[in-house]
Image (cartoon, rainbow over all chains, first blue to last red):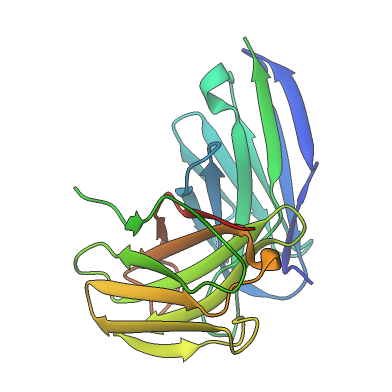
Length: 112
Length: 115
């Protein structure tokens, strides 16, 4: 089974709205990363948050991490049509091999 | 900067044929990953190399799959003989990795169709 699971599986919003995606995981982690995948392309790294951090920002992206709930959220503010993509979280497990394990992703559609 | 380069971008072949996928990682990266992506199973890690040495190949589905990394700038994933259920998008990724917490850089994948 997947270590990280994104929720919702699909999200459809209008341009200008905020988009929030969540990731839940099962075991303690060292780091959690978010990636974006545009149709027909490879995954692109967006942001990394370490287990001792609670929040990080990068441009219009805000990531939070709650290790007590084993969950993370990715917020995209003032979304644009160009944000249409699939978003994945990847976790590497404490005491593990440091190889990130990917969830199944959230498919985001931003309507112009 | 050149990213991870994969070839071919698309491959269509008949069942039973040998398929070879190629990957050139980012110069200076010491970790290389091969993934397979399908709608049914999502993104699956097939094999992970560190400093050209296979570290974890537990994701390789069966003996028909093999991967090599003869040097730091080249890796291949081979399927012989190929089967229709091998149809998927295969990604190669590289990172500075080894101790975790490093972003992976993905190529644009090879879309493989086995008829």
